[in-house]
Length: 446
Image (tube, rainbow, N blue to C red; front, side):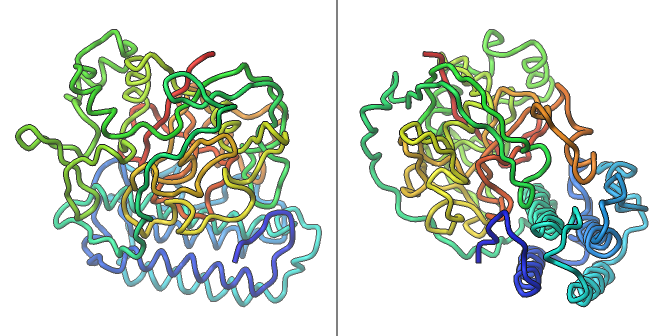
């Protein structure tokens, strides 16, 4: 059931989606011991039991305390579940509940929320209730924490995490022919530029940083037809890419040198072969899959090595959703229908990337593949608000992160729930982050 944007939601739809989201969260933590849930596996990440309590407290604040109002003017979280008061590196020192207590807290909040639904005017004009915004926001919040939990589990100490795999990717096929009208240099896709609509005016499903829709003028550009593969990245490594300072900015080269980085995170060399690990499975690096767990500096250095650059986020979004033939911008690369496991490598349960030509329906009208799922894609753009940006319903989601410290990522990964991604969705992180499920594709000026 796709909760199409721009309309109110029924009690049945809200209840079903809330329970589905919670079922997925509980499935992901089901293989874990209480000790695993309470342990801080890496200073970059929270103890998972903190994420569980935070999910429930966020739901309490927005679906019980503020659901009929305009919001408290802030995220409204209190105590140990306020992420700004308690950054990740210190959360293991908080008086965290036991795993059973956390589950009981989640269940108690959920019972109260479902009971309260029947007394709400879901068709009314209260700002948070309008077109179901607050319910979609809470759902996306839990979806996003699923991906955060998976980042933690990839870093897990002790026995590796056995992911509850439930999806096999389609069989990879030969690359289809690129439409002649969009053939660029070196097998890239050429987009004509011109006026393109970026962002959205939808206020039911999208976050404030995706709004408002606005027209930008783009110069013609070429963009890679797929994300950069492991095979291409192996060539970069073999050509001394990590040892050539001219490919890196001073800050990036200093950082990788200090950290001793010579390959993507989770890669290790066995003799003359590179291996990688996804949760509890190790395998040789597959040259046909997108490279993953690279930081922005690595992506930028590869692009320089290849004689290209990273796309701006406007170029990325135009490539993802714009149909030059009709001038229409779409919700997803393939159209407006929600993703399914047959269309894109999203929604977690494949627990790995897939070879780049596997999802043949995950294609734009111009012949660009894989812009949704598999890996988040770094862009060259710093995270700022769009022209006409207005904070809603609280500044701690977007506004407090605006500035040149963060780079924008687009497109989602295999670990992204399908309800938490669309062509306009903007993610952001520090340029040094490698625990996120991120890769990239390159662009080039025409």
